[in-house]
Each structure stands twice: as structure tokens, then as C-alpha cells.
Image 1 (cartoon, rainbow, N blue to C red):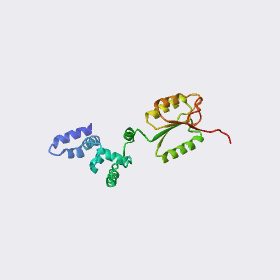
Image 2: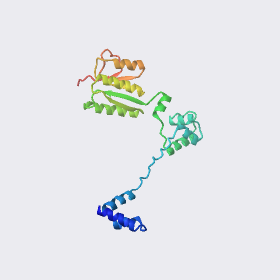
Image 3: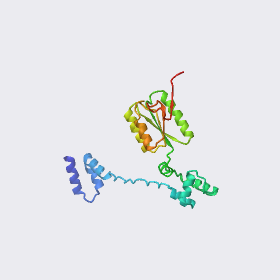
Image 4: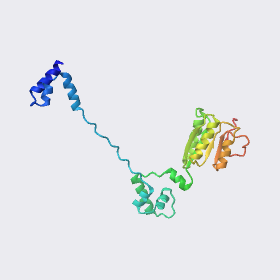
Amino acid sequence: WGGLCNCWESGAASRDSGIDDLISVSCSPIVRNRFSKSVSQSTPVPRFPLPTPMKITIADIAEKAGVSKATVSRVLNNRPEGVGKETRERIQAIVRETGFQPSGVARGLATGKSRTVGLIIPDIANPFFPLLVRGVEVALSKAGYSLFLCNSACDILKEKDYVQLLMEKGVDGIILDSAESDCDCQLELLEKKGVPFVLLDRNIRGRDGSVGVFFDNHL
């Protein structure tokens, strides 16, 4: 309290002196520290989100090239009809310059093809399957397709869910190594929806005429 009283008395006796002198000369360290903390606290600088770059569309490419969106689409899909060499090269240069990335979903809707294939295997931990998956992926890549890999963990219900998911993804076909040989419900669903499929390693009972790749396990 003595320090506080001294501070008050000194302030009354020397009102002409600035508050800085009052704090530095007369006040106790406690008051000095509290006051300094309050006046030195800086106001936080507001932060604003960085602007999001605008997405380049086919319409933007067409405008830059002075052509129609249909012409740009033909170039992106490597369709030669109706596009001259100079126009094609100009569009391709703009695509490279802008870093434009065509939408696979939009292309799939336009062409009816997703260029993807689903592969369902029963056990990824089995040393046999990684080599098999690698072979499938290499073959699909050479043909211009991408692979969706699903591991059913030998669960027939999970396998059914994966079949449904792959159809929703719009894959062009499914390669199925089924967890069971007695259930053809997945095949019935694929046939109903018109999705091509190939059986792998294990045939389904009663489906001897189905397209597949099987092993006889004989040397």
C-alpha cells in the first residue's frame, strides 16, 4: 500500500509531469508492470483469406483460341475430324499455357466412358494378389485405363457393396475375384445393369459359361 500511496501523492503533486514520469519514478514495480502491459498490448492484425484462383474451363480455352467449345472438346478427346492442324496446335498451346485439366467426370458423361476398371480381390495380404494386381494395372495402363482396387477381406457383403460402389463410379467394367463360389448375386446385378465383368481365379457355381481367367492348380 505504501507504494500505491506514494504513487498517488506524487501524481497529485506533479500533475504537470507526464504519465510516463509518474509511472517510471514514483510507482511501485507492480503498478508499473501492469500499466506497461496494458498500454503495450498490440491489436492483432486481421488476416484475410487469399483469393482462390479461378478455374479454367473449356469455354475459357475456346474464347482464347477464337473457336467453339465443340472444337476444343474434339482436340481434348483426340478426335481429328473438323479441326485443322494450325487450330489444333493453337488450342494445345493454350491448354499447356493455362494448365487446363479436363474433368474426367464431364468427359465420362459426354462419351459414356470413364476409362476406369474396378478390380475386387478377396485378400490383399495374400502374397499372390499384389503380383496379380500389378499385372492387371500394367495391362490396363497400356490400354489407356485406370484401376480402382477394392479388397473385400473375404467378406461377401463387403464384396457386394464394392460392386455397387464401382457401378456408381461409372466404371467401364469389373474384374471380380469373388470371396465365395456359391453366390452369384453380384453377377446378376452386373448383368442387370449391363456392366461387363470378368471372373478371376474362382468360377461361380452354375456360371460355367461366364468369361473368366481360371487356374487349374496343376503343375
